Length: 78
Image 1 (cartoon, helix red, strand yellow):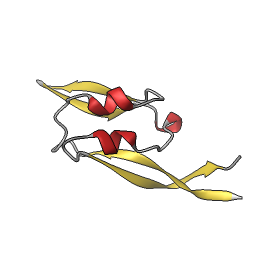
Image 2 (cartoon, rainbow, N blue to C red):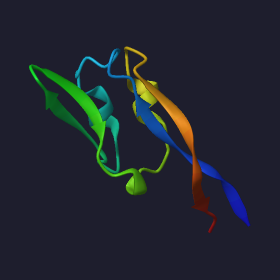
Image 3 (cartoon, rainbow, N blue to C red):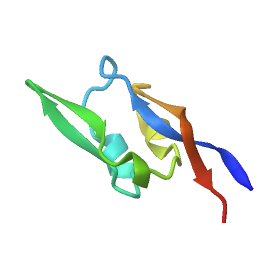
């Protein structure tokens, strides 16, 4: 039996302020803050380890994270 493809966080760099709330709630620790010039932005470091729980998207106060299903990435059942 196969589940639908796993959803991964898609971070909008125009809305991300680098506040770090998403990093703080990420249980598998796959998000980090990275410096881009003089600004910090959230970054998904390990897509394979992401559980797709969406806590990062829920916690983001700026609506900078949307969960998007990835074609070809199927989450195993069991």
